[in-house]
Amino acid sequence: MSSSLQIYLLSFFSFFFVIFFILKWISFHFKTKKSFPPSPRKLPIIGNLHQLGSSPHRSLHALSQKHGPLMLMHFGSVPVLIASSAESAREIMKTHDLKFANRPKLNIPDIVIYGSNDITFSRYGEYWRQVKSIAVVHLLNNMRVQSFQHVRAKEVAVMIEMIEKDGGSNSVTDLSELIFWLVNNIVCTVALGRTYRGSKFRNLLERFVEVFGAISVGSYIPWLSWIDRLSGLEDKAHKVAKELDAFLQGAAEEHTNKRKGMDNAQSDEEQDLVDILLDVQRDNTTGFTLHNDTIKALILDVFVAGTDTTFATLIWSISELLRHPRVMRKLQQEVTEIAQGKPLILEKDLEKMEYLKATIKEILRMYPSLPLLIPRESRQDVKLMGYDIPRGTQTIVNAWAIGRDPTSWKEPNEFWPERFLNSPTDYKGVHFELIPFGAGRRGCPGIQFGVAIIELALANIVYKFDLRLPNGVEYGDLDMSETCAITLHRASPLMVVASPRSTI
Image (tube, rainbow, N blue to C red; front, side, top):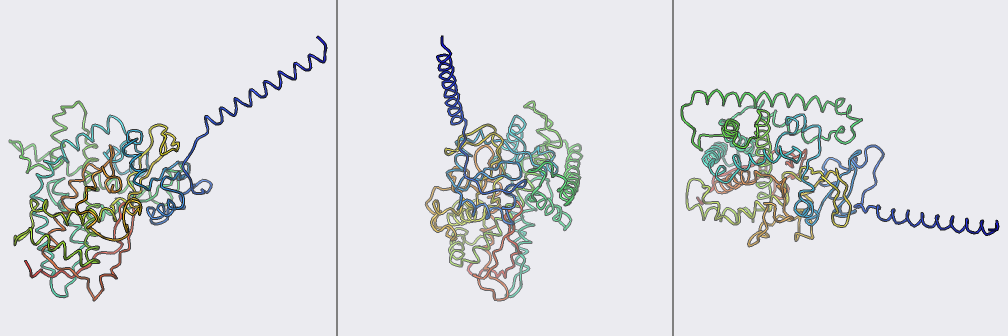
């Protein structure tokens, strides 16, 4: 074979192999290329953390209007998916619910809630399934919630009496203060068997919510976790955790000692949630060991979710009713007709109050107590709305933005309860345009418990009193500024003049 032919063949095969490898590389490139959701520009190290601002739900809503209802952001080194539409929420919490059933590991919950061993923050797995089952079967089922009717009725009556004592043509009532203690007393009695009052106890709960809502740098940029120590956040969290543990441990020991001297089993009405959990721990019928720290973590869940969110919803409800006298009059007319002259409205009357229920739905749409639902985390790679979402992506659903989405709601920024009359839309996790309590496996199991307090308290307040703003403030001038740590609150206390209604 001549040298020229050898050179020709060598060149041909070299060219062939080069083309072959180029084609293989192109094929591999297109097969492995991922399609990620649109992303705002990020900064080195901190990613998009600087774009959260003081009201993250509003900041993320504004970004979603520019980048779309599904955004991929980065909080430090952590990829975070932000869902801001009913469609994206449905995909996450229904279509791919199991794939997004995990919770991310977060530093502050680990410190203050016994290593995140509660229902809300524990990672998906057998432990979470067991504690969720205990809560659903033993603590928050329909029969158990109904068994606490007498507690709700008693505490609402006490609140009404206190408003009456404050009442007068010009006497100003701090309704925020009274409603806080109403909700707190109900939750304390239900959970622990007695009430706990005083500024020290309230301060402890407020500090818990404060540290819980703070952004932990170490959760998103682990090598900068020293910033949490330098800022004092970790120290505050450890102090709150220590005080809460001492309080809950004392309550548990008090129950254990009381039960030692009892001969007979308690009736349902005599049992509080600690009693129930101690019975579950003693009987151990499932083979799952219910440790003392788990009991305390479950009670802490009820405390925080039951008190802070319920209180916030009631205050927003009355604030909007004050700003909309037409709605207030219509609601007062309904409760007055159904009460038929009773001294107070009873829970059995509430089922007939369609406008009351519509009003509360409208408040939950506009002011979800958790505007950003508790983060989830993808357990595996997911194809979501045409985008590739990698395993381990933290996922946040902006319930506040979804409740104000004009594609789902007509005039979404207007307070208009009539939109829910003769409408099947509800807040129980089936209709994804209204998800203040989440949905799917990680949805809130205590919906019925919280709503029962809201309905009874609101119905009785508007039934018994005409409310107006003090110092000649016009309804339209009521300050509706908000503050948001993890829960959405009014920035200032709600002060009113409450006059007994003459039509009762």
